[in-house]
Length: 115
Image 1: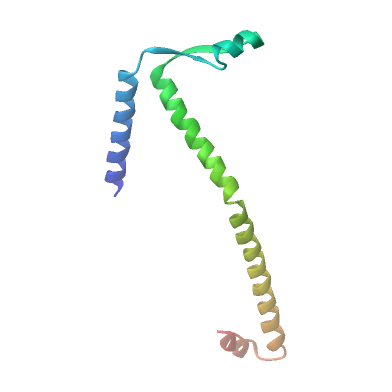
Image 2 (image 1 turned 90 degrees about the vertical axis):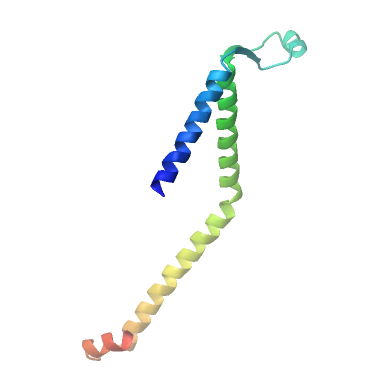
């Protein structure tokens, strides 16, 4: 299974290298459209190789998706935390009730009865 994982990672790395080699042409990215940039009198312009734009888009999309899912699943994590807290409280209560039930008894017999 470990070798399949390494093979898969090697194929992905090879694909990324091929994409980078095939898309080395520089592209110009601007923040605002030309008409709006003239009206505001400001525009951020950067020239990058196309493969950086492609890979950057993939990475930013993954990050946005991870953050979105983290916020979306917040209520599940909160509910699980509340259930863990209740479970721990009930376990403590059961232990204290077992202790009360076995007061005044022989310790060995109390352990055998609890098992």
